[in-house]
Structure formats: C-alpha cells, structure tokens
Image (cartoon, rainbow, N blue to C red; front, side):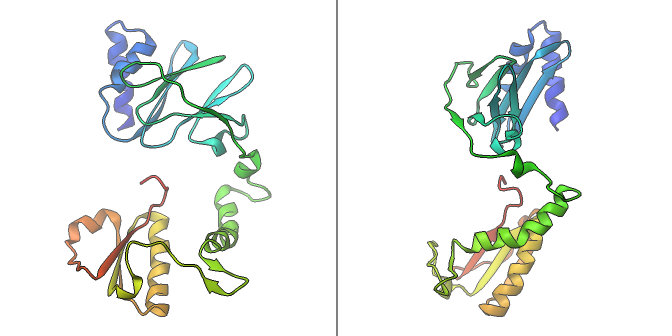
Length: 228
C-alpha cells in the first residue's frame, strides 16, 4: 500500500507541481496510519517526512539532517531530536528543517536532547540483533517485573486496574506474532497460579469469533510493536 503514495506524488509532479508541493498535495489525500520519508530523483538535498500514527523524528546534525523512527534509531548519528506530531510533515534539507501541519501552516516543535546512545542499537558481541534480544530477555523481564514486585520485601505492588481481578471469572487474550507467544505463556501462568480460565486468539481472528463475554470477563490486548 505504501507504493500508492509514490504514485500519488508522481501524479502531482506530472501536473507540474514542484517536489515539496507535490508531496503536500499527495499527503492531504492519505488516510490511515503512516510514517513516510519521500525522496526525489535529482534532488539530493531534500527529504519530505510525514507522520500520522507511527512515530517519526528529525535528527539535527552538523551540516546534516536525519529522519528516523525515534531517538534510539538516530542515536548513532545525533542526540538532537525533534519529534513530529500526528498530521505534521517536514521539509528536510542538509542544513535546515521546516515543519508544517496538513493545511500547510508552519508549526514549531520542541527540539530536545536525547539520552539514547549508539550502544542501544549495537549488536555487541552477538551475531545479529535477534540473538542479542534473545539473550537480553531475562534482564528485560526482571526490569519489567520490578515495577510490580518488591523483590527485597518479597511482596507485589498494587496494580491500578479499572476492575477487581478477584471478581474476574475468565480472561480473553488477543495478540499477534511474538506478542501472541507471550500471551500463550501468560495463559499457562494465569491458569496455573490464579486458577483463572484463559482463551487466547490471534488478533486477526478474534473479531470473527463473536466470543460470548460477560460482565465478569476481562480481555487483554497485547501489542507486539507498541504501536498497534
């Protein structure tokens, strides 16, 4: 579907519009979630970035500018970051950036210093990032649990939930990809330790099941990317 955007921009260029205006007119026709970096043949000093939903950040360098998903992705190049907001589009050139809303009005977005380091996107002594992330999982899980468990005192911290877990009769979990695998693990844990029945579905199939849910049931929806 992203290829449609390139065709829309090309159509506007064929109408005689300049690259920046062609990109703007194409962006105004888009619906849904996107994060785009649009480049033009023959114009090496221009990238048009746009976001609606997924994150997109401008990285400020010394005589160079960058576009990336977030501060971590840009960490090897710069720590000076400007995040675009939903509906923003940016004209990025080697020495400057101008940010606009979808109506074409220039807007100011806060420039900030990121604490991310290139080490966060380094493979270390691993062969690839997948191997690195596999070996990091025990540490990641312990850091996550530390928000909810006092390991020194051996007690769990209260959860701020909109319902009372003690009154839940059944749990439904919906997720995709590796998040689905995490959901499978949680199914075993909930059933073993909480004695709570759990149904789990791939998210794309959950909508078709028409699962009967009551007021004493709860549903968990797990995002794989953190975006969806």
